[in-house]
Image 1 (cartoon, rainbow over the protein chains, first blue to last red):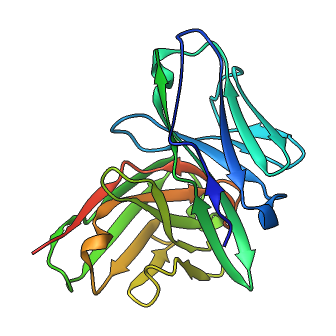
Image 2 (image 1 turned 30 degrees about the vertical axis):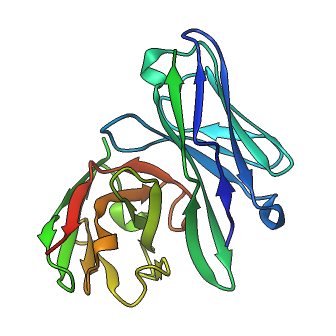
Length: 115
Length: 121
């Protein structure tokens, strides 16, 4: 099964930019991933899909300051002008069909702190 | 407006059973695959199961295969998860989620508020 690796934490100053990384296992390095934001005590919210070529498509209502990109097996979520409301857990995930079995895998999540 | 409202969570003893429901509205329910995703206390997200909208094909994570059954009633716009032989490690908030791409497993564009299942004696 694909494995998605995320650093456990990240932080940046209010108003700054931050870049989160989700790394796919090498044999699945061309997969598309999705990013989700989960604020404390809330349900996750879909942010965007990021493909291996770096193209991305956002969910409804996601502001322009959220961007996606790719490099090799790494998929990135960058957001600028960091706000206190951005303090949350960010999860990446991907869907796959292997040997006819459909499934979905999440990374372990990155907790973002706004300083 | 898409709404997903879960119910049926609660406290159950190990080995017991529970049935979760999810009432959906604001979209053509039968046109979309639906999934259950869970989150153990203080842990990350885990996909549990999915069901297609039209064919009713079902898919399960290895951790629940043979114990959980996903189903749907398109006439009632409702998704279900029958959970049997429950274990302590099944303790989690269970989210009902809608697929964003249609009748496959692609990504989850809308999530319910979640229902807590606690397995403990």
